[in-house]
Amino acid sequence: MIEEVETAPATRAVHSNLRKVKLLNVYVHDVTVDEVVNGFSEGMLLTLHVDMIMKLQRDREFYDIFGQFDLITCDSQILYFATRVLGTPVQERVSGSDYFPRFYMHHKDNPNVTIFLCGGKPGVAKLAAENINAKVGRNMVVGTYAPAFDFDQNPAEIEKTIGAINASGATVLLVGLGGGRQEKFLVRYRERFPHVKLFLPLGGTIDYEAGALKRPPSWITEWGFEWLYRLVKEPRQRWQRYVVHEPPVLWRLAAQWLGLYRNPFEEG
Image 1 (cartoon, helix red, strand yellow):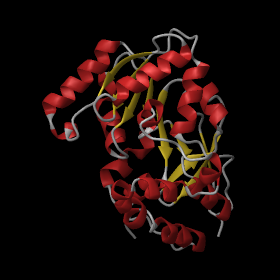
Image 2 (cartoon, one colour):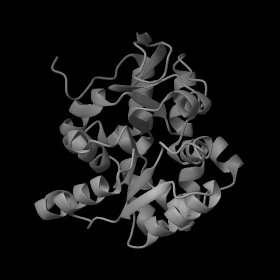
Image 3 (cartoon, helix red, strand yellow):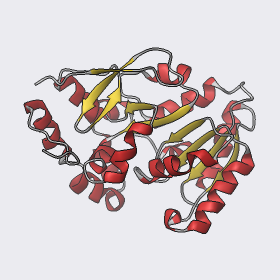
């Protein structure tokens, strides 16, 4: 069964109408990585992957803020395949880890683009900053901070995090605080970042840039087996996510294809 595809108004910085492709109770925009790099310079980005879409089936607060993101990309080869099976294919997968290196290289000579990295284990964001600044040949990353794991439950830690970001004067804020948590943080405190123009909740991208987490060969990602690669490399950390939490997405997508899927947050 083919789901009807809506036409979305142009996002704040992408100067053309974008198709919205329905996936369960949310959607992704039909956009390429080059279009995001070249055209999206202000607003909030969300890169939708399987872990996130499953949280959006259970977390009402996360679901309620979904519409506040200006651009939503398909950050999953499995979801990319799903859009094709459903008859509403997007042009390509646009992951945060693919987009972000292209973004900072695209702006390497633009002094108006400065970045703050928020997240990761202690020391990881600093290493990522050093690597990025070496690649672009200037101090593009102007600040880093690794909040405590339970920072969102600690008002003092929240204030410390906000203060560090604002003190840097950065115009781009990348947060890697875990799917759902990082998006809620940005929506709750967005208005308290007067210098920031572009908000990027990009999960493990800080680890990738630091070299703390290695990316798999491209063919593994293209065939949709990145989850298996991660599971083999880090079984303790990844078992719950890839074996328990994410597989039910397949049954829900099958239900959408059959016209049987129901949004858990809508009555009737």
